[in-house]
Image (cartoon, rainbow, N blue to C red; front, side, top):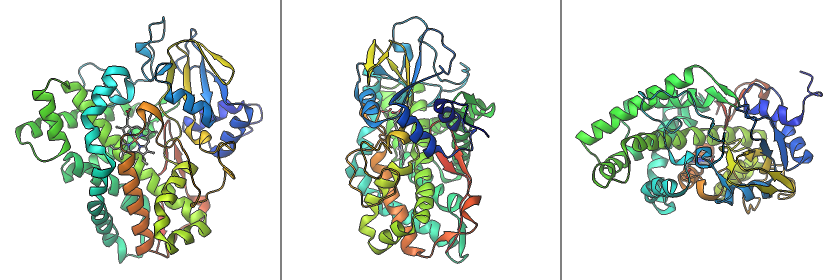
Length: 418
Ligand code: HEM
C-alpha cells in the first residue's frame, strides 16, 4: 500500500488496530523523529477533547508517574464529556470482567490502592522466586512431551501452556478448564484493536465472566489453598471487596497473567533465533538469561501501548499544551527504542545495561506480575535452549506471521525443529 500520503500517526494507529502490514518499528522511529507528543484523532470522536500520542521515554514517564495530573479513569474527571471510555458494550445482566467491570487497571486513587493491596502480597519477588522450582517442572513436562518428535509448535506446545498453567495453579483454576480460558483470552486480545472491537469479543468476555463467577461459587463451597479462595474469604468476611470487584480481579489476573507472558516467550524466542550471535551468548552462559529477558522486553516486549491516560488538569508535555480531559496514548514500543536513552537502540544486545524500560509500564499501575513474568521468562528460555540447543525455525523467516492488536503483539504459531 502507498503510505506516503498518510501521516505517521495514522500509520501507527493502523498498526495498533491490527490491520497494518507495515514494519511497526520503522513507523515508531518515524513517529519519534516527528516529535514526542503528536496529535491523533480522538478514538471516540470527541469534539470536546483532543487525543495525543506519546513516542519518547521522558514524556511517557512524565505522564505515567504523575498520579495527580493523569488518570486511567476518565469518569473521575469532573468535566463535561469526559465520560467516554474504551469499554465494550455493557450488559448489566452479565458478570463483570477486568475489561467491563471495576478492575485495578481502570481505577485510580483509593479504589486502586485498595484493590491492588489485596493481592500484592501474593506477587512479591520473594514469593515469586519460591515458585521457580514448580515453573521449572512445568517447563520440563512440556518439553518432555515433544522431545522425541524432533519438532513442535513453540506457541501451542510451550509459550502458551507454560504461563497459563503457572497462573492457574497459583489461583486454583482446575486443569480441565485452562484450555478454555486460554481460548477466551486469546480471542479477546486479538479481537480488540485501536478503534476496533470484533463482534465476538463481548460474547467471550461474557463467557469468561460467567465461568469465573461459577469458579468463585465452587471455591466458596470448598475452599482450597489458593489465591481465589483467599480472595473469596476477604470478600465474605472483611467487606473490602465486592463480588463484582472479585470477579473483575480474577479475570484480570488470569488474562494478564498469561497472555503477555506467552508473547514474551514466543516473540523472545523468535528474536533470539533472528540474532544468532546473541543467542550463542545465552547458550554459552545461561547466567545471561535474566539480562536477555530485560533486553527482549525492551526490544520487542509484549505490550505495544499501555491503557490510555486522561489529563485531570490543563498541563504541558514537551511544550505541547494539553487540556483537562485530553487522552494520552503512550506507545511503549516506540519509547523503548528512544535513541536519546539507549545507544544503538534498534539493536538487540542481551548484555546491555538498562536503567529503565517501559515493557511493564511505570508508576502506580506498573505491572503487578512483573516478578512472576521475569521468573517465567528466565526458566522458559534457559530450559528451552539448554535442552534443545539446535532449535531452529521449521519454515522460512518470511512465513512467520505477526499478529498486532490494541495492546500487544504476538505470534499465532511458530513451528520449530530441534
Ligand atoms: C511479560 C509479561 C507481562 C507484561 C509485558 C506485562 C505488562 C503490563 C503492563 C504494561 C501493565 C501496565 C498497564 C497500564 O499501565 O495501563 C501491566 C499491568 C498489570 N499486570 Fe502485567 N504484564 C506481564 C505479566 C503479568 C503477569 C504474569 C501478571 C500476573 C497476574 C500480570 C498482572 C498485571 C496486573 C494485575 C496489572 C494491573 C496493575 C495495576 O493496574 O495496578 N502481568 N502489565
